[in-house]
Length: 208
DNA sequence: TTGAGGATTCTC
DNA sequence: AGAATCCTCAAA
Image 1 (tube, rainbow, N blue to C red):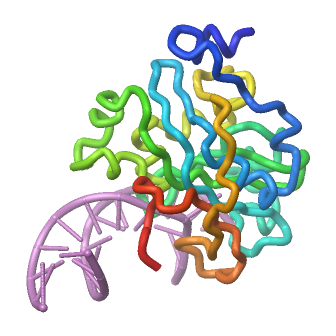
Image 2 (image 1 turned 30 degrees about the vertical axis):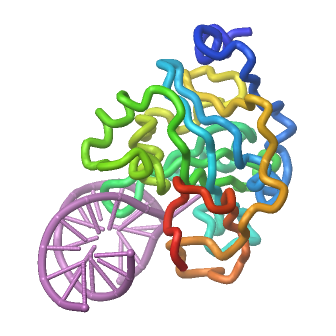
Image 3 (image 1 turned 90 degrees about the vertical axis):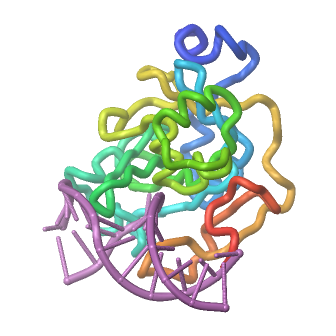
C-alpha cells in the first residue's frame, strides 16, 4: 500500500488510515471520533489530535461553505477524507478533514494536537513556541507545526497521496469527551460542535 | 495568569 | 469589512 511506504512504514507500520466511509458522515458524528487519531507527515512528524470542531455546510451559518461553493472552499465540496486548508487573519492557516458526501461542504477543523514525533522539526517551524504545549495548541499553530499551507489543500488523508495522513494507532476516542460551543466564530455561536479530550494539556483555550 | 490590542492579507 | 488566530505587553 502506497500510504505505508510514503508515510508510516519506516517508523510505525501498524498505524492504519481510516476508511473513506469513516468521513462520509455528518461532521458532528465524525468529529469526536477523530479525537486520539494521529496526524502524520511523511518526514515522521506526528501528533495526536486532541481537539476538533464540526462545520456542516448549508445548515451551519458559521461554516465557510454555508453560502455555497467558491474558489476558497471548493475542496470542502469534494470527496470526503481530503484536507481542506484555509487562510485567515492575514497570516494563519487552518486544517480540516472534509466530511459528508460530495457536495455537502462539511468538515472537521483540527484545532489541537499533542506532538508525538518529529518535535524538533515542529520547533523549527514554530520558533516562538516556548513549551511543547505551545507547538500545536490551536488551529493555526497545528498547521504551522505540520507545515500545512495552501499547497496541501486537497491532499488525500486516506491514501496519503501528498505525504500527509490521518492514521489510527488503535487508541479509541475518549468515552466522554468535553463538548461545548465553537471558538472564534460570530454566527451559530451556540452550536455545541467543539470536542476535546478531557483535562488534556495540549488543548487550546483551556479557560472559557 | 489574565485581558486588551495589533498584525496582515485574502475573500466576498 | 471582517475573518474557523496568534503573539506581545502590561498589570496584578
